[in-house]
Amino acid sequence: WNLQDAALSSASAKLQEPEVCNDVLFREGRTLNGQETYTPRLILMDLKGSLNCLRQEGCLYGDDKRDCTVAWKGTMTTHKEEPPVKNPFLQDLSMLEGQNVAQADGGPRGFSDRRGISQRNIPQHIPKPFRKTYHLESSVHVWSDFLRTHLHPKTVCVVRQYSHEGEADRLDAFGQGERLLCEPNYLQDLEDRLHFYVEECDYLQGFQVLCDLHDGFSGVGAKVTELLCDEFSGRGILTWGTTPILPPEREPMKDMYRLLNTVLGIVHLASQSSLFCPLSLNGTLSRRPQPPPPVSFPHVQYNSSLNYHSSALLATALESLTMPYRIHTSPMTMAQLADTLNFSGRKVVNTWASVPFPVACSRSLPDVLCGMLEAAPWKPLSSCGETPGSRCFAQSVVLRGIRRARQTSNLRPGISPYSRLHACDTGEEVVACYLQTLYPGCHSTSYVLEGPCKVAAPYPQFFSPFVNQQGFIMEEPMSCPRVVESIPVLTALQSSPVLYRTLQHLHQEVSRVDVRRWAAFFSTGLELAEFHEALYELKNLAECYCSSFDLDQTEERGLLPNGGVGGVGCAGLN
Image (cartoon, rainbow, N blue to C red; front, side):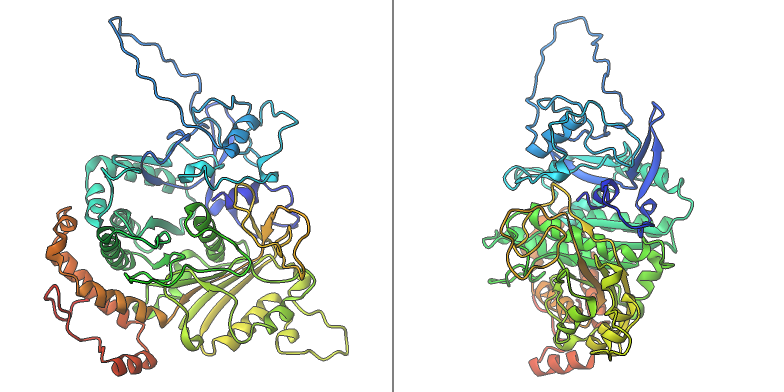
């Protein structure tokens, strides 16, 4: 979602020393012409039709003037396909790079600020896209429609036998994804790309794996994490499984496939990762006739039917959640972060976020948090619901966008502090004291950063009128239009007892499924024995989060963990 690129390209980086080490996720390179580049350390697998205007090999290292001379002297028939139409944002990017707007050859896609590639022939009357507001709700269909970051030729891998659009050739089932990476050509290609990035690292912390959880990419993610676990033992593997917001009207077959993919994905991804976290704005992961509404934020007015909106919110949370092993002042690595949360077999965690964090520009952090002592302002982003009684085993909390002068109360000498929060000397102490009040006995690590989350165009401008240009909350709505350029964000990665009920409900629901009715799902290569084993592992995983409170609640409902299964005839399997 261009968030790291926005921070790199921003000319308003006022901090004396950068807080974030961008080299963790980006790499320096050099083109054939000797120009320096700065591209993400990224391997991306997607389906045919997902690139739209983007060229698969990128634009940095290739030759735009390729020789298209045909050696054949016989009769030829030329079939020409109309190029994709670029949205206004991509048109402005092309013009800023000195290209023809009507040309859709996937040329340079980003800004060269801080990346050593000069901007050519930029017309002075064209506004820079990150200073302009775009309304792309009707013109964004895939992620490449809003990408402005340059990609390395080793980044994009397109799966040709499955299509992004239409009902045919869909990557719908977990077994399809697993079988895909069993094919030698895709497996070899992935290993080559992986070793290209790994062998140039001077210190390899680990890997972030981001995959869809609801479709066949859950199987792809399972094979990828298996490969990483086998080849890079001891390195951190943090896996995030995303699920789009479910429409009110859903087809029964797709809904069942989503449920089965989710269960198999959770089990396999958790077992082979250091940490696994579902990411979604849905109210639940299971099937319900009337599911709870999507997550809402007080100062965000997003359209839940648009992936363009929901993915922006999830990306904002993910950008802050990963800060502990990306900031200069933190000695923590990916593996160490996982170790603080995954003890006692609890390798599944849930996410919370406040986007934007509701703070007025004139108030200090202790003043703001003193008004939130009843409950934290964040919302669940893992489809696990609220945590009753504010119980938590361990958590990692990141707060961004609070200037150092506002992180403490700065009381004048002789004035008694109003609360324990006002007596703290640093922002980290303020947040730690606040978390200890909300979650007594919980192991918490907290980080407070001055730099906010940059939300440059084409990030959706779906904020309420009470949010000003810097993302702070005003007492009165803004009278004139404004472009929100940055926002403060509060996120938490938690190991929580609420996961017991989430995983238990998934186990109970899938255990009642008569798999004989879904033979097509299992015809993709998934064995019934593997499915039954996954249910058993899901049950064991749920019990890792079981507390005395949950046992009492379970006994009252007559739902003991060892109850019957039914449906598939596999008693005791989860």
